[in-house]
Image 1 (cartoon, rainbow, N blue to C red):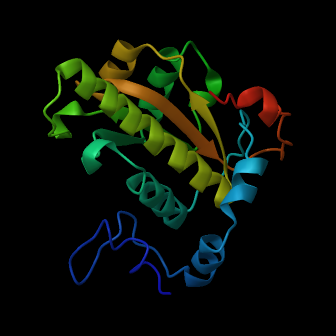
Image 2 (cartoon, helix red, strand yellow):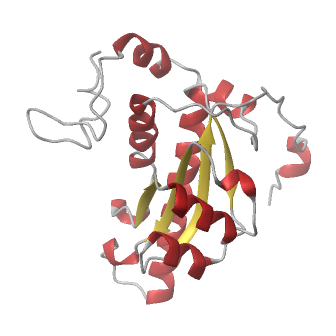
Length: 203
């Protein structure tokens, strides 16, 4: 398997695909990551609020974006958009729009927004909006799992002032969540989860 031709083929359709962040070939690292057991990733993932002051490699960002692109969406229309926040000032504004949660200002900040205009289905507007919210949520979840597979950690930010976030990033699309990503200061162990017998209800 070659990099980046195969993993990014769904995003770049010409004969000479260009990455968003062209960097040196990382084929060995990518091959190992692609063989990662998804169940280990899900079992070991833990939200992280403290990140190292360390840049996340561009090729890892590409793989996170590729993971988001594979998320299931209503009708396959992908009714969401991702804003990759690079501006330090905008990150500060997002902290304010997120109930002053400081970890929103992370090495990588992704804002997932709903874009119902992409969903070409014959349903009432409120249903289309719901589909779009689900699309954006799934994309963020896939990104979060991909980040963990890449040796990164993340924190999902759901308590946000929607209008404040929209103003900060300059869009009329409603945000569903913010994902802060970086290298963890400390590896945290997963918290205990519910017993499946208490979680699953057969009817």
